[in-house]
Image (cartoon, rainbow, N blue to C red; front, side, top):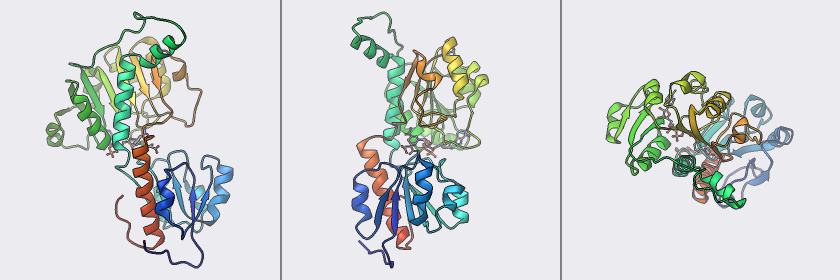
Length: 317
Ligand code: NAD
Ligand code: MLT
């Protein structure tokens, strides 16, 4: 391991829980400090000495946080989405932003499949009911996936892995992604369609978009009204891509039959109207929460942090 040459050991601020392997990769020639990145009153003063800050999705590294970090060289996002980092403001200050774009794609795709199956067969509600002492077979009627149409919104890394896994169920796969070449989709056995066609044709819809000004609120009341009655919607990408109030209304009316949700417009949250509905399956942003994904994300960005602190070229993680 090349040593970091500096008068004093540079401070690496770990602002969220990361895999234990991160510390090993960071080595002993840095000073590691910990802070709860979701607590702004703790984060801002802690950033004062930091040469690197390591985060997941709960820490906002915005212009204010960057201004509080005069020694910062690198922001390391142990995961994919950079919607909690003001990349433009960081670049303006000469602060490098690194992430691990492939680290958790398998885990996120598998989680979306799990949410889809759990919603289709009402598994969490049936599990809770049985544990409460009720043996109710007719209450928990499900739907099959085989021979249905599955719409993938965003056919990027995770969308493709999700589609490949769903293909094994014998479904028709369609996708909306204006940035993908039709030839690439065809190779994957996916038919590219407009968003409106996807909404009208799908029995199941799974969203795999980044959060951006363009995608925020992409699926609102008008779009939900176009769906097949009883459609099952999965969102393990980002909260707010589907308007939560509109989704709650559609779940209440039966326009949407069920939803599997991992992400929310505001996080952390424990009091969404979506949590009180019988036809939602909800998890607290667990898409990347596997041993494998956390290990890959943590070690990839820890390597990037070391390179950045050594002043070396940082390749894509
Ligand atoms: P990706 O960049 O590989 O794919 C995103 C796809 O969305 C691209 O193909 C892009 O063309 C498409 N897209 C962008 N804007 C669009 C638009 N307006 N309309 C339609 N398509 C559009 O990213 P990925 O690795 O597949 O990850 C997707 C997102 O999933 C991440 O940005 C992150 O927010 C989220 N994610 C969540 C978890 C979790 O824990 N729940 C884990 C990993 C990633
Ligand atoms: C990501 O974008 O990688 C996900 O939100 C996973 C995470 O950071 O937990």
